[in-house]
Length: 128
Image (cartoon, rainbow, N blue to C red; front, top):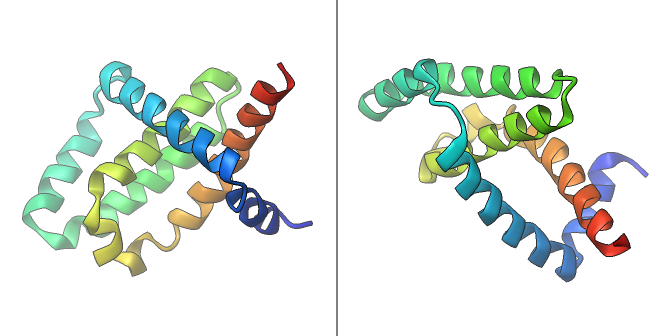
């Protein structure tokens, strides 16, 4: 079964979705309170707030951060980096929908990275 099909099947599981929602809230709070401030991203995000043309550099930077996180050998840092990108996408809110075409190369990759990570954590909690 392909990873996209697995993810779609997992997303139909109500128990997993409940776990994912609770865990996402916990991690988002942790990332917002403890993750280091990224000056480059904040500068891009501020410019994007004033000029819509900055959407492409913002997406490029988020893709870069996701790829960089996925390459980390330390699993804790890898997960935190992936979560950081996810939290930034959440914070962009309605802009992600408004600029769907620009975000279409980031969102599927983020989804196929984050959901299996969450599902593995969910399975560990079930096995304990």
